[in-house]
Length: 244
Image 1 (cartoon, rainbow, N blue to C red):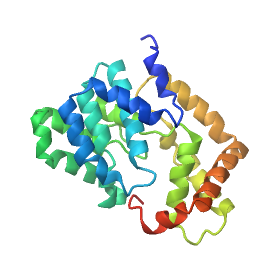
Image 2: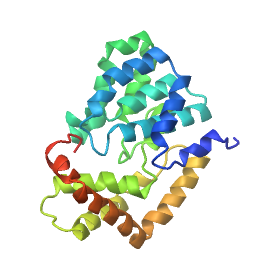
Image 3: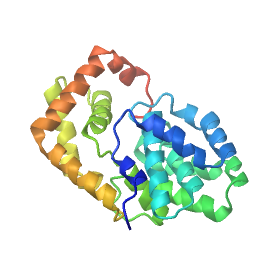
Image 4: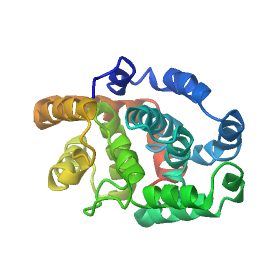
């Protein structure tokens, strides 16, 4: 399949995410988008690494892959919008909780039949990057791949938040960086793909080059670490955000 101009947008820059979302949502059922934006998006307000920028980034990629593979775009939108919603219920099993929330949302029956809702539920349940088994359906593969952070700066933001929240015994940047860096190296599923998509494969290879250059990765993580403390974000990570 040929690479289209739109597919190149998968190789994003962080300032493009929200504008791209506003454009892509025009292709969807307007009432469904309104429901999600008014009732689902506000539930991400107290999420840090999994807040709306992340959710909309995953939506963008899901919609682009949905177009690439001729999938139902409204289904791609919904499963991406719901995929992390269960983090404040059970962080360690958030994919299962997110699937339950999607499956039990009676409003979705207005837009989808039972089979479609089941497919989306399974996709959400199977999206986690550390999962060793292949997702049960192709929508799950697309969602899982769309959820990968092929950007060292975005990965640093999320990882440092988790480290600061959950590892209070670590006191220095170097300690947090080494823990975060080694975690990714030891869990290689975080940097692998289920779909054989040429654009994502290229972005993955670029990410690997950047991340495996440890000094480059350290400099990016250092910049994010300093920002967290300089802007007082650390206090909200420790006491406000719920996605850890």
